[in-house]
Length: 266
Image (cartoon, rainbow, N blue to C red; front, top):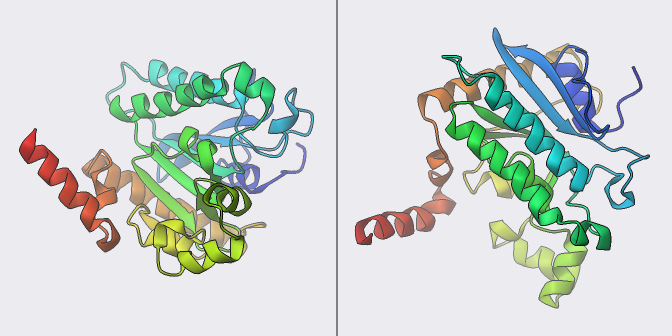
């Protein structure tokens, strides 16, 4: 087996105990079967592919091939388990730089490809599959929306290599007509504008924030810690399915109030 090319592939290989990848997929989407606390689970990761047919998707971005392939894999998982009393948990291993930006991507409907992936994950969750997003690296922009954000629970590494945001700093600076330095200053008082994982954690969107000693070269203790966190998240999601757990943090109090008032009115 070739050497892993990024954190997504490293952790997919470790958590699946080196299991063979599901055949017949594009090289940038890897799927392997494994176990978490005795449960059969399906691990899915988007990984870099230097030979990708689309040059804009060669560094771990989610593009046309990746979006449609994610939708295919997740939808097939739902179909395979349709008659089972207990559905397999799906673990999205997340290290995605962004969606693929390019003229061909726009012309060929990347919005549809990414929407198909996000829709498939949502349908899996609603069909009874526990979906866990394990953020081991970057979770940026539309790539995160397509691969992982629809999860029942999100887990992230407490590490400087983990970044979560709607867009990169340089792009955000251009859009808001600010400098990167000005954006970073605002982020000190406005958590949703920050890129670091601790500020994201304060929004209540994470089930767990893990201190992993060697995120790029995990040892047995690191893998065991992640396995334990995944098992706990699966149990929590089975006990309380849905996404309501995301509204419990202090920094989401206003969101919670708005939702309650909308329910009262509608």
